[in-house]
Image (cartoon, rainbow, N blue to C red; front, side):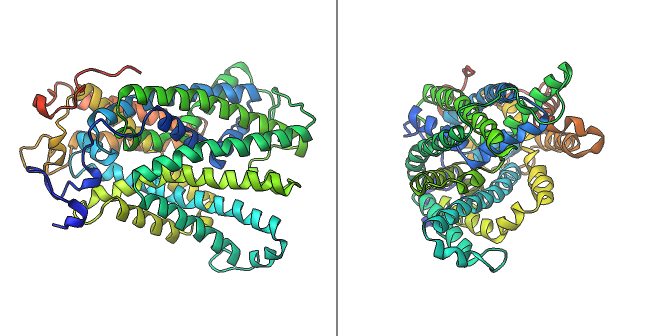
Length: 495
């Protein structure tokens, strides 16, 4: 046994399923309402969040219709995040261990690895985008550095490599400090992007003479039915954007002291703050239309146009800090736990984070980002499976298991352990994932279903949930001994 990873393994637990970082936690954590509020600020306040919002213009929506679609999407995310977040808080285990309830002690590695693939790709891409913003600042402040931004090695200039590696190391250093360091960064980073976004909004609105058209849209006006479909498309593009984070929300809420903290953090940070950020993003893009004659999808383009070095300095620093914050909470923590779950005897949270960082570097994210086929078909294809996984896990926990879970048995691999299933794999959940995953991918990529492509996430959720419920009809939930249940496991949560 590697005691550096494990510490002491509790009696009855398997060392193949346990180390201290993925151990169950008591309900006395430090992730309270404010921390989860800041978590959602970090999750939404990013270049990616702005780009997602701007991308809704291609649906032909007006400004107010875009906002409506995103708000409906936020409400759906709020419901799902409460369900997953409260379950995580009650049981006190990270996402890959939570997945053992549905997929088995070995089968849980399948959803864990799928989530890790998406997270690693976007971790690298977000780091690259943040480094591009930092490089822009360096050149603005020190024009002589422009020569170092020319030429390059493996697709990046010397200045590009320096900026990327600095951010790469900085993020790894935060993760090395554990979840408490992540919490403190999230608390700080979540608020800083508001500084940049408000500064950018004031600057672009001033150039637009403080006038925008909420009725602006690209392309011909939509019919009544077309408008409804487009608004729903905006709704589910928004939900799909948070498909991965919703799935592994338990990584954070397991550290919350109460369900009330989870619900209030979601209410203020997701609904209140999320709606405000979406509205501000729409205002900026509508103002950019008036200034540039077209919607600017990349805010870096607008930042590069700012004449004031002081304003640019504030904006770039804020964007850089916020991007590091979102990258760590959405794309770094999850694979760190996921890799720890694959081989708990040798991989702890820190080593899982190091593996994540190295893989994110090796995929050369600047090349990945420049290849729409790779992003849309590979990353997007794996991402489309986040919906089926969410549907399977929620229905299995709330409907099949009736919220009754033996936490201790999640760490046992004996033949008679309830989550050992068939050699560690749940046949029913794997069948549900296979069938619903194929359905979601067909909706996303089959040319004949192109008009429904934006609906792959809800289709995947519904298919995964429905097939799981169907396959488990008549299956009696495991009756965990009272001493091994979470305190509130038998009471279904309110959403």
